[in-house]
Length: 302
Image 1 (cartoon, rainbow, N blue to C red):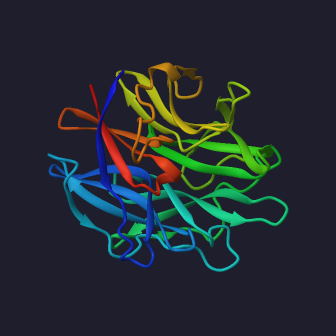
Image 2: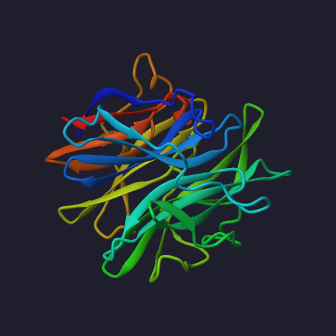
Image 3: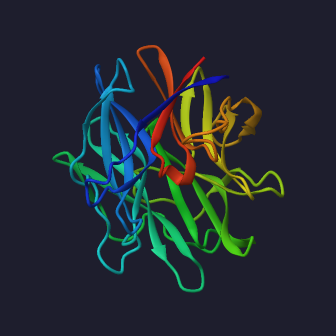
């Protein structure tokens, strides 16, 4: 697999108070035959993220048609798990056309830097309303600090979720950094989930310490996962794995087909890949340096 980079699509210009910086964690959805919506998390001047979108042409994804003027999902009430940001990681459209947005809520700590737990919101009049003010993936004994980065599909009358989970921190150059794996769980209703999952992608070397939002597609009977590898002293790189059942995975990171550029907006990191095929062309939307501060770009499968 070889991805051909086509460049940057969009970066906030700072004109919206809730979306001054970043265009993080792309989640593409084909709205109509001619319009592709890319859900993105934008940050205000305090670094707090809220859900928005850009609509691009399905015929030329570099052409931005419209941008959300207000959040589709705002942060939670004071004191809740998502009061410091709601990072949307996947959007599921059900057979009745209801949309469910799964997101990671940021909760700041005192003895640890933060916790990441998962919430869900339902579509209502174009916006999303959180179903609960508490997480649907709450902390548990085996997954104490991190149960976030949720990617969900509805398949065979079940909701399947791949997410990041962990209970540890390590010191890297004097800064505490999270340690987590990619795990898998299932749910009948998409709301109530088990307290712990099965590890799909584990730490593979001493240089790795975690992963970013997984993104899974199912093609020709094979599950294909694109994920972000957190590498000490280097930042994110995009990894790739395959599975016959979505539970047991074989890492094939050398086949990811994309890496950092020699210079420019994605010269330090590449992360948060999302892959979708539109009109016969496979696109990868992804972020570059500083977790998406430099915007969102794309590549096509060569």
